[in-house]
Length: 132
View (tube, rainbow, N blue to C red):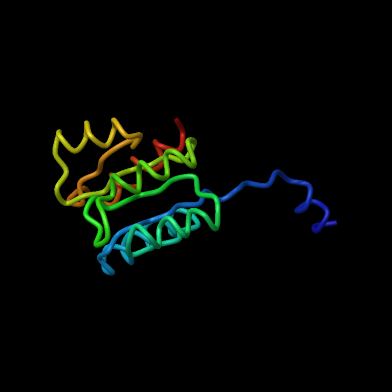
């Protein structure tokens, strides 16, 4: 009987998040943050690995570092926007400023988050991006 009840309830899909950042400590911290909040997280150290991950599985949201070792994060944002127009894209940077905000918005990013922001703020912005 309990098995029947469990199988008849609504299934909630876990949001999938792609994190692209070249700093191992930042990837670990953010992965832990998002997994604790219930996201299924895939992380990548560079744009090429991030693009490969995006081709292999669907993602609801991507958090992308602005300065990656193989290109600017905005190039990956542009590439992802063309292929996955419904994916929420967020640029994450230690160098966030108004110019970057407007540039990133112009290529399809939903937001720019400074790496100096609190983990709660980053999580709030990711959750907000999924609701729009």
